[in-house]
Image (cartoon, rainbow, N blue to C red; front, side, top):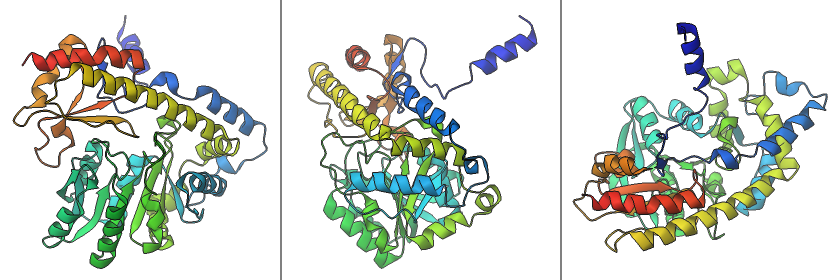
Amino acid sequence: MNASDRVRERLAAQTTQAWSVPGVIDLGIGQPQDAILPLEILRKAAAEYSLTSERHPLQYGNELGDGFLRLALAEFLGEHYGIPVDPEPIFITNGNSQAIDLVCSVFAKPGDVVFVEEPSYFLAIDIFRHHGLQIVGIPVDEHGLSIDALETALARHTPAFVYTIPAFHNPTGVTLAQERRLRLVELAQRFGFLVVADEVYQLLDYAGDAPAPMAAYLGSGTVLSLGTFSKILAPGLRLGWIQADMSLIRRLAAMPYVISGGGLNPFTSSIVRSVIERGWLLDYLRSLRSLFRERIDVMDAALRRHFPQGVNFHKPNGGYFFWLRLADGIDASRFIEPAQKLGVGFRAGPKFSVGAGQANCIRLSFAYYDAAAIEAAIPLLARAIALE
């Protein structure tokens, strides 16, 4: 094989953000399984678009995003959120990570303080660091973000915003209680900070009892609700949204690169609009809920069967994750290599910490592997931990 062929072979393998090690069931991977991605639904939607004479999706788009998608999305969200959703104050994004980055660019500057749940989504923490923000961790308990701790921190800091994952939190799986949501909004109004609510798991509610989203509080003028099709359709679409008061939306749309390039992903928006309008997104979401509910049951039963009582966790009602807490003083990172040798992977707690905390914690995902693989992996993980 010559040098050119090796380059071609290497590039041909660079198609997805694949984190798994060959031969390892990596329960740390927090993305949907390839096999469940809705190829046929998207094929039908693309074919439907090809039969139209619409050319606007091929043009520079409106700065706020495609109007037809915003109309369809508002109707869809309203049905699931149980609240009226206005299509106008919806800003279409290039997925949720880009939305977080955009929020930092528009609503914070280097040196500003931001409050983040401890633990939290590790890549959001990386984005905040990249923007030169001072990150202050606020603890999470079984009812979500501790508002008492937040209020104490407000005596010492004036944050630009509070970043929260209120529904089926990543990584802990807990949901912010209704009364805490109200207090959070009240504090935001009183102290003049924004609430950046990462609501990507809101629609992955397997028990049907999650509180109304933080999007219900847009009228306060303090809330930005972030959503994405990555978790409910396909990550490769790179399509999401921000809901907020119109004054905040206008600031997002005024970014120079948005004005220069127009609204984000107009062509993809036309495909996803068709998926929503045809009812295919609703059908797919129902199938996801059923599938993940089964996988949760399998993982929960396997954990209870193979792990000792000293390992604490709760069975999540939504989202992607289980959060295991080992005994105090145990460093979960020490088990990564023994686990991989046995053929199983996980993410250790410090990865999700603002500082060096959560050392005795483990995050497991049930989204990337089927029930059989989960059932096979959990006893291997238990054996790896027992090796120490």
